[in-house]
Amino acid sequence: MEKVKIIKDRLKTAQSRQESYSDVRRRDLEFKEDDWVFLKVSPMKGIMLFGKKGKLSPKYVEPYRIIQRIGQVAYKLELPPEMSLVHPIVSMLKKVVGDLSTIVPVETIEVNEELSYEEVPVAILDRQVWKLRNKEIASVKVLWRNQ
Image (cartoon, rainbow, N blue to C red):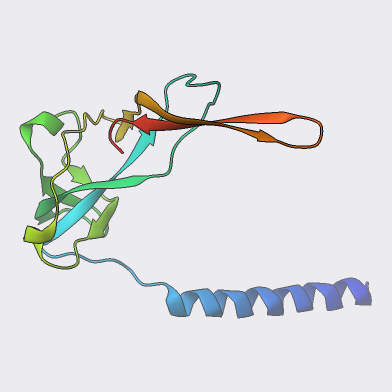
C-alpha cells in the first residue's frame, strides 16, 4: 500500500507540473465589436473519394465583422446572404492579424449548417509509381475545388 501511495503522489506531482506548464501558454481569445475574424469550417470529403474516407484539416474562411458579443466565447457575425445556412452566432474564430486589404478573396464556398463543405476533385495533375523491393505504390496528385 505504501508503494501505491508513493506512485499516486508522484503521478499527482507530474500532472500538476504539466498543468502549470500548459496554463502559462493558455490564453483566452476575446474579441470586441467591429473586430474582423476568420470563421473556422471543416472541409469534408465525400462518402468515398478515390478509396479514402475521412476529413481534411480544418480551414478558416473569409474575414467577417463581429456585430455583437453574445456570451463568453460566442459572437454574432455579419454573414453574407450566401451563408444563410450558417447560424450567425458562432464561437470558432481566429483573429485577423494585419491589413484587411491584403487578404485575397477566395471563390464562394457553400457551407452547410454543420460548418462543413464538400471537397470535390477537379483534375488529376500527376501520377507516380514508387517501386519498392516487393511491391509498387501508385501515387496520384489531385487538384481539389476550394483548396
